[in-house]
Amino acid sequence: QVQLVESGGGLVQPGGSLRLSCSASRSNFNINTMGWYRQAPEKQRELVAVIYGSGNVNYADSVKGRFTISRDNAKTTVDLQMNSLKSEDTAVYYCNVQGIGSGTWNQFWGKGTLVTVSS
Image (cartoon, rainbow, N blue to C red; front, side, top):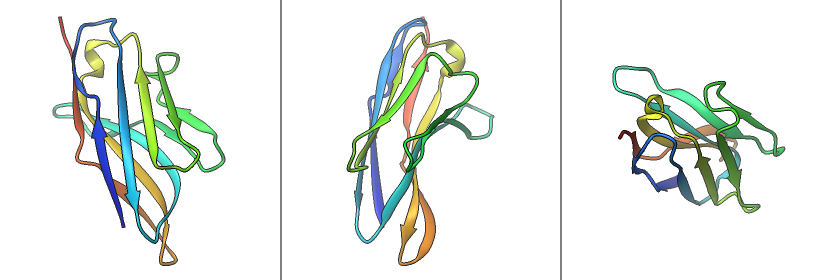
């Protein structure tokens, strides 16, 4: 099992920056992929950024060049540095991890942290 705790959300003005952090505690689970998703009001949850076990990363087109995902080598934390924030980045941001536990592929979600971009 994996428990995820997100932090770093809040209110920021357009053009500002925020850093989200997700801490993962796990038992009998080998984490492979770590990422961030977001869900804006009345919209579906969407991928923001993901970092794979290989170290490769993938970003949504809407955040490329503005957001940076990183993780520690032990795969216990994954951060999302968000720069040049726009009003359309307003959403609840969720941490996600995927991997294998007891021989089964599974994924876990954090409870989410709210990011509001507004003047």
